[in-house]
Image (tube, rainbow, N blue to C red):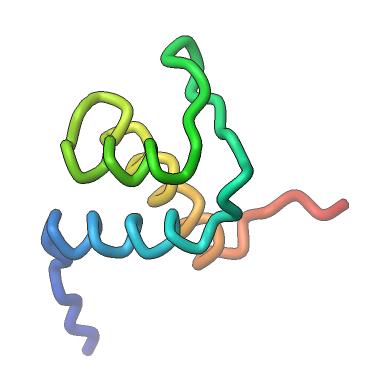
Amino acid sequence: MSIQKRISDEDVRKLVLARLRSFPSGRRISIGSEGQFNKEELIDRVKKDDRVGKKIIQVQLTFLRALKNQRFIEE
């Protein structure tokens, strides 16, 4: 029997913030038509929980789920 613990939105936000802090400082990431953002701007957007912050959280969760399920294209 498996017991799954529900992860809170705050726990998810903390996880995404930790991942963003590990990004190189000089990098810029493009978020569709929203523009390009550096690491500090992304961290700020996730903390504010605005549209860009929510998109970053969604992208990071998709990546982590793919990693968990080993759903990557082999090169």
